[in-house]
Image (tube, rainbow, N blue to C red; front, side):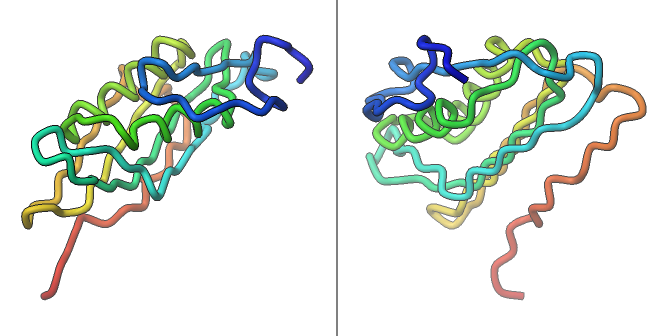
Length: 150
């Protein structure tokens, strides 16, 4: 892609906040076909808004593209911008899903936020747009419920 408006192929700094982060989109080369694109972020980090301590999650984002695809470098930078952002697990997960849905206009999008325990309680957060398109194979996100000893 040689689109000068994209971050792709450029040396860009890490955004300091999710609000500052730019998300780029590119045209879907198969807009007439339903298929699933999956992004997995195994080391997502944000800050607890109360204690300022880091919170960690595994994010799994599945979407059925409409007219647009998210450009992966911009997604990586956007997710990285949460490292200094104080927000609860639910807020981070849902805000990411909503921002992607607004940008991409997907036929379907779901995000699973599998948060590691802090204070002894893991929190899993799930958000989706609408219904899964008919005749589409949507695999399980493959993340087992949190289980400690036993």
